[in-house]
Picture 1 (cartoon, rainbow, N blue to C red):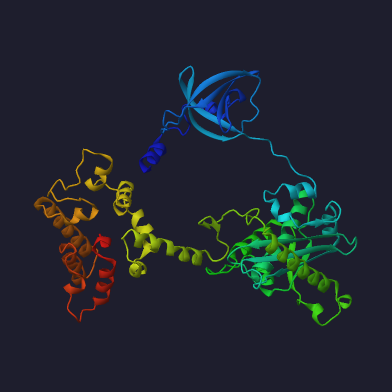
Picture 2: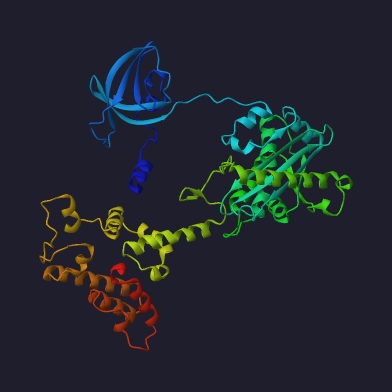
Amino acid sequence: MRSSQMHLEKAPTSSLGNSLHERINYSGSRLSWIRDREYVYHLISSDEYGVYKRDYIHRITRSGCKYNKISTQPGQPSDATLYASVHPPTTPDSIILHSTCDIFHEPTNPSTFMSCLSSYSNQSLWKHLEIDGDGDWLIKSILQGTLLISMDGSYMSDLSQSACSGAFILHCTESKQEIKGCLVDESHQADNYRGEFLGALGPLLLLRTAFMANPQVDCSHIKLELYCDNKGVVTHGNQVDAVLKPDQVQADLIQLMRTYTRLIPAQLQWIHVHGHSDANTPFAQLTIIQQLNVRCDQLAKWYLVRAIRTGDYIDPTFPDEDIVLSINSEKVRSSTKKAVYKHWGTAQDLFSRRDKVPRESFDLIHWEIMPKVMKGFPKTFQDWITRHISDFNGCNRYLSRWKPTVKNVCPSCGCSNEDTKHITCCREPTRTSLYHEGINDIKNWMITNHTPSHLAQLFSTYLSSRGESTMESLLPHNSSLITLAQAQDLIGFDNLL
């Protein structure tokens, strides 16, 4: 790459010899191949097309998949959803399908509140939404400063430990019109805190929808107040640029809350309101803000009980959630670090079951450094390491399984069962000599890179033993390296290699 750059820098001209016009401008006539789930179609003309069907006799290659022509039909195909790229036909009646992409459709710009709301891909968010009128009054209420926004969450562990809900109400003090709804989620991270954030996301999405329907309106000077009885929600809502802790609970909803706040072209201020104000004061004597909070609490509880009974929960995929981490097809909703560490239990099971790493020594291995170590190797060596660790390299034990002419014996010493472990344990003189040459190279490398000489000697002696001696047995009882040696013996000789 560097030599190419220097060559270009020395060139007398920076212009290309050939025009790119033909490579970047495609007329509609070139897009003459399209595809649906079963067939590939060749648009021969405006009133005729050829139909090609998959040839299942021929296997798929790097070049693509073979299709054979079965007919020519009048008109145009109606079910095709993909453009198709095909290799030039080898025969008049066959093609090789290389790749496909979605057929482009000119996007439509929704212009009303309801049409914008319908444009979201996850419509399950609105299954409990109730809107007075057509919702277009919302932008007017925002501009007039007559909009009150309240929310509350609910979690009932006695009924379900995996479900929580968040309800919200947007109330216009002038017209008395409202939008109210509830999001009920099911996950292992369910708790009251998650319910509060669900209640906060609903109003933010609705505010964003109102601004989407009215892009011409300048609301940069508008200040909107959102009332919540959870101080955590209020804090995160007012600090959208603060760095989240690595172990932050409900991190997915907090990130969404920040994303939606940035997308709303108005100034948002979150204000704390005391919850359950009706416990000691009659509802009629409460302020309108307190009344809205009480109503949100009732909505959240009602829809939560209903969802637990019917199993009717939202799809957890939210709009503008650019990065979604899933483990075993389940979305990670809280601390990514904790979720991944918990998933390591599966890795422990796998390595233990495959007799690779004993469960008790799994945490002794510095797994975090392995990506950096692998990245320093050439790609071909990375591939070899992966095959070697997975026991799928070119040893005769595995070659003999799919090639009957190969015998499962070592071609050097004649011992049976030549597996990956035998590579470093083979006693054939030539292999032994090469093995010790490799050990000397490792020892010299360690010394060159300023490894303490006694440590370099320890590893050299341990490798020379070929697993017949423990590392601890090679040290005096008072050695400072005893702990290291004990850990290495738990990991095992083969895993060191």
